[in-house]
Image 1 (cartoon, rainbow, N blue to C red):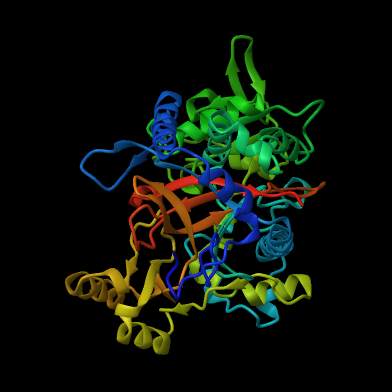
Image 2: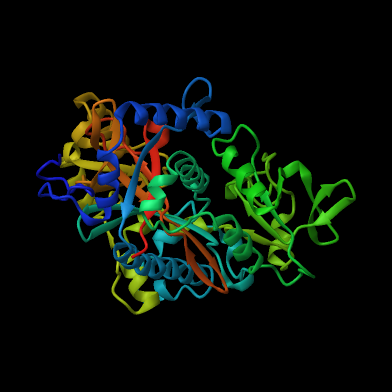
Length: 474
């Protein structure tokens, strides 16, 4: 069932069924494979009817695709989840403290723990945010921490998502689909719920209302529009939260507030959950050609007239070059050793590191510092000689644009195939809400799965799928 070198979350390394999967296995053994194949088709139909799609960029035309969904849940024991939660909370606290510091007194640079050029020469750093204190001191209201597992008690943080982390709608729809199709399976397992996330998100955002807020906070979701790859999620979350879904042309600055157009005229917004990148947020302060943002919103923000979630400039915290300093960042702001480990990382801006990476390209994973979605990366062990040669030229031309990491033995979990259960590699993105009231981590998250046998690429844009993630209550 499992490769000697790979930890399988259902079967471990020694072909012994692990406890979290015991109830699932007994249920699966009693199921008719033909019924399960019909259920898999039913799940695909449900996703198609619901409109759970994403857009694929980088082709001649943007292509809309169905998110592949696998009916076998990923199961995590509560003790494992509690350990993970402590590490996630520690890391998110450190990220928020880092942002407050880096746009404030910059104590971490003065202390020599982070080179100044990592900030000064970084495109994700927004000088316009220097001295700005977000309402409640919260920069990262919604965080997604990407985790990979390599052994029974061994998890690594692959990357931090502190700008506009996506995927939470898939987490919620995956659970809804499983509850609809396999209610008897939930009766056999005490699965912690994820359905409170939209209400938790609304509550958390409302707790970050700005000083100008008078009465119950008005919350809105700012979307770039229907052609954005995550538009389904934007509309889904606005609907589930009972918030308004707005585009830039629906908003304007009125009497020092950002207001949205309604049938009763323009109404002020207190909290704007924006799914628009920094550069397009305000044409007066950033990209002057942007049609997606709101002219003057940054001036209102600086004056305390609106909360923007996540805060502009948060991207400096999930930059992949900064990621390599996260152990130092966690220790500096919490005074504790990191509970969750980073993947070892070579910064290609460093000459010695660059030489090592160039000498070992066929064994490493190389990523763009600002890349996402699995684009612009090289997976050495599965790349052709031609791909490696082409990537070498990119790396030599712009070394500061890349970091490199070893190829980890990602854990596998079973997926359902026509021949039964088959192991595939996975990662996990838990979702974290931050407000002055505290940190809320939804039990589970989005499990992304590489549907191709042996593949390590789990991104949906690169052919990966998703599955429901269960945290069992003891």
